[in-house]
Length: 227
Image 1 (cartoon, helix red, strand yellow):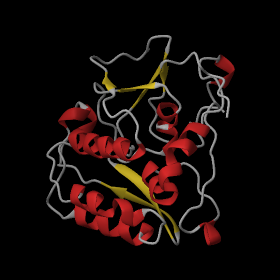
Image 2: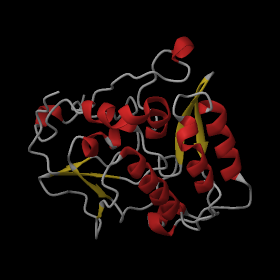
Image 3: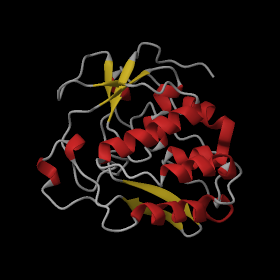
């Protein structure tokens, strides 16, 4: 596939809990990734929740946080609550949803070990998972970090700092879904925009190529900024 957006050298995203596939597509296509590390926490965002696909449809999993005014806290200062065994519940749900996916067994032992770790800060937990994901996808696992908050990025650094795909804020036009076999597509059809974990379990070694093929336009062109 011939890509048309060779001018983009880097792009910036928020650090999510198992980010959705569109956020890693430009990295797979050759762009440098910059993680926004100076933002403040936002409730009901991808920072502490992600979606798995069950036989009944999408199911959201959320990391509980220690009580406090998180909206006023720098993201890197937000603490995970360990008052309940959420990590075990998340792992059981992931295993239930993807246990029969073609490549689940290949990653299961390492992933289960990750869910036995007990990070204090949400940022550290999410970065641990993202680093593991990069290694499985054979993507560069040392992204750049921002040094200060800036609402306007450099002209050559594409701003992809969005929480998720909604009707009010759709994916950019230069990102297009690429279908792949999913665990329950015989009854649900293809569900786009799920976490990259879904893609990894279902597509295995083809996952990186599928991510790359999602980038179909030039994000530096104004008419490609939104769908």
